[in-house]
Length: 517
Image (cartoon, rainbow, N blue to C red; front, side, top):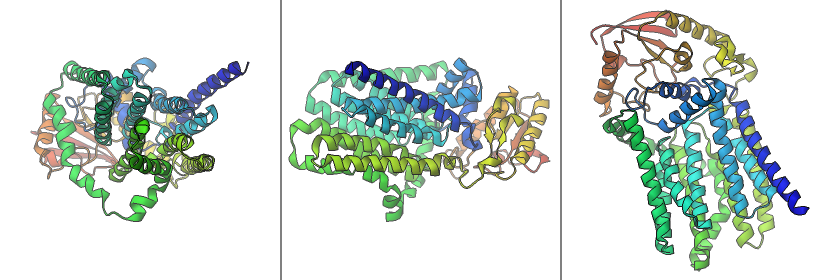
């Protein structure tokens, strides 16, 4: 009877976690809008669904894998905001459930596994609610770390096979921090292969690498994407920005580097202590745990470094419950005062989850809506029926979203009346989707310097040629620009120079009429 009750409890917890992790994110995916982020994958997923491919049809420096997954969601569930948010919710569910099963495999109680996992569900994807590159990449990197832990702990070849595939998908979501995690796991894997002398593990890993490469090159072939275009846009150009990003690590200030991320460091303090202890003991019996502990410590440090170099709001606090869960496992296994430490880890996880939920999730800080009265929001159906139930409010019109909506509706009316091939430049990228008019945009998102080359960059001429070819190939006679643009002031004007005339419809909407470009 006890066994049946335990199984029933286990199944009940799983069902609840699945339901909660999906529904919780679905709820917050409908609150607040940050145009440049909220509609980016919505539009590119729709484009990919309709046969327009990254690198060939539009410039992109990130997220082709996420676009592909979104296209699949649109295909299965229809083109709607519901299926868009569901994409993020499913990934929120994935990391929640895999965290639960991982902690369970290390013999934490059902209650503790549930506690740490539900905290992950609260803090991971609901910050944005909609698909976003940083969240997808972090989740895929975590899943690769989990696979590494499982591979060492369970000595199963399937996990060695999955690691390179997950890392490959993560890299095609965003290069950083994936490249750091690839380096970390590769080094530790090589050490493990040499130490264990298990050739099957290495072969499984190599098979995973080969499988990913086959899938990747098939995608390039199927989409008729030139490898050179992929290489320049996804490797060469982002690398040209690397120096400026690394400058954001400086200065090395205590408040900025240590104090701001104190809870992350506290959550791995037990692991750091055990790392030092094991390094001094050098016992073979703890080699597997030693590698796992190293991987978690450095994963924490790498994500902090990446957060310092990103232009987005803080999002790595969702790792605190995961790190505390691992610390809980190893404190129980190796430390005498584990009860005191365990209570501290539980309290820290609970308090940090409540704090970050209140400060970042509930207040929509990641959407740049912190301090804004969300009660001023308006139902998105005022713009289009497909945006129904979205609580529309942005950082640009926080006190008067009706004004923003009226400007968008004016643009919708004018664009709908123009049936010619036209380029649409806007952060409100849902417009072309709902008008069922391809926007012929040469880039996935508009953000000068960060998204595509500025005039001082060595790849500017490549970018310029890419844009002009798209204009000529598609017989584009006009470019419509709807502001505000989060990262641009005069889009494409440094390329077009004097080959256009400007027609203004409002203070935020105008048209560039092209001639002899």
